[in-house]
Image 1 (tube, rainbow, N blue to C red):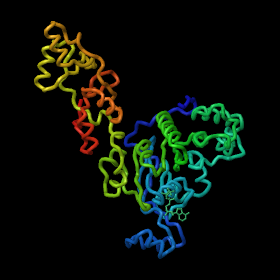
Image 2: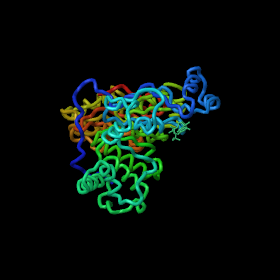
Image 3: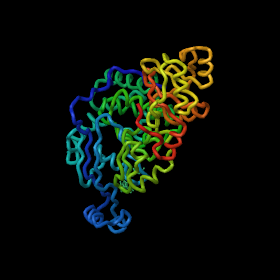
Image 4: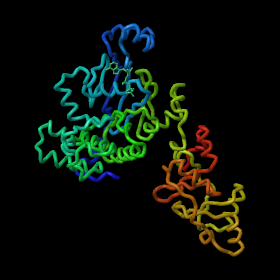
Length: 419
Ligand SMILES: Nc1ncnc2c1ncn2[C@@H]1O[C@H](COP(=O)(O)OP(=O)(O)OP(=O)(O)O)[C@@H](O)[C@H]1O
């Protein structure tokens, strides 16, 4: 199910000012749960473990000196095992939890020292929250659940229902406004949760294990929808998950947490191919890199390539010189016309025909961003490398079987920054 269009949520242009300021800035954030934060922090500074601190003081060190920036429009994933501090961090950002120490700025405003009234305004104007448990009001219709945020802002009923209707349409639930939450499936409930968070058009969405309670197929649907939505709305999203696949799929950057600290922040590719320490390496050890690399990462410069205006003898010469059995053929603008084989070229030479006449168009062709998993199945059924073309059908590179195997072996494949 795809998201429908909407007039009220258009992509906001990111102003052309350099350098871009982070929309969320977190510095040295620390949270201790329990009666004795000073003692706990003192022990932490002396190198005691979380467990030792708990035993000695009865306090839990949930976050220790966490720092990071989130840029506008970014999907920033907090990932880590249970108890690593993800939810605490998220709840410090919307100030459901008061940090023990440190600084959090949202759009430049420091929120750690803010009073309740100011916090309410920030939450209302800037933050949308989506929970694993949906947190819908069971005795209200779907429409009234979605309109709830506007209701407490005092928006008149007609206006808020109109807006809620639009957002429901957008998340694929047009026509369900009159239903009760109890009548909906898990996936639909979470769409309502998403719609409710979007109704007041916040800049930032905080999503705490939002898809973790859903069946795997529904979960994948919701991930795809979020990506679609994000492409159009460019919200800033902080997404908490303990699922590495989900983090890799959704995150522009991922912060991997362990024992209340961030052990690495990076793009999915950086985390996978350049783990900063043994913990990260172990965490990502089972990831199938074929899903992460795409055609453009492993392709080679497309040489040799014949112009279709050239004669078959040119193609023969190229095959001989490079010791290969076929040559890709392009037109003047480097648009891919197809491929000629040694056998056909020899026949063409004998029959006096041109390359343009013998070119076969059924060559395996993929786009620059095609994932390696899709290319593997193409290559398996073809004796030729796969051609990588851009939006204008221009040949940008070739992917050889060896390059894929190279990527799998984590050697970076035959990457040579082609074209
Ligand atoms: N209200 C609380 N009182 C005391 N300790 C807490 C409280 N909330 C969280 N903790 C502790 O803080 C640490 C971090 O917990 P947190 O819930 O943030 O982790 P998490 O990574 O979100 O885990 P999960 O995926 O299980 O939710 C844990 O040791 C947890 O037991």
